[in-house]
Length: 118
Image (cartoon, rainbow, N blue to C red; front, side, top):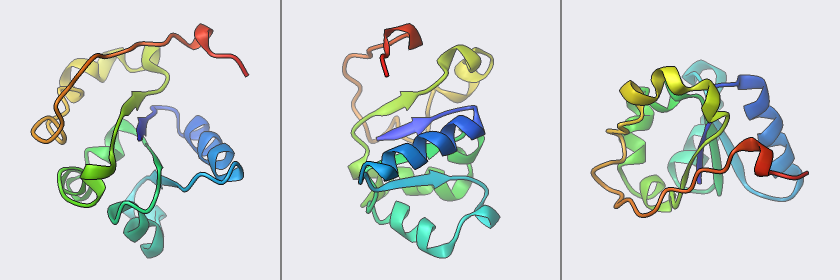
């Protein structure tokens, strides 16, 4: 699953939480902030959940990885976290050219944050 979040602090908190529950998790940030091992694990599809900012997931390195194997074939869902914050870039960015050629879209389900319970 690819989770796109415009809020960096929330993204890192969510990644920490999923890892604490034994879920292999990767975080896509600027290349200079990532270790070589993190990059390889994400690109080879060794993580179940990938968190990324909208800007980072659109970097050429990640756009290419998202449409290639094995990473691209492991993405079963794209989640837009904090979607109320991203309305300004939704139209221009989320035509999602990075995956539109490889993923057939089915139903889209929108869950407002008030529907989540902790």
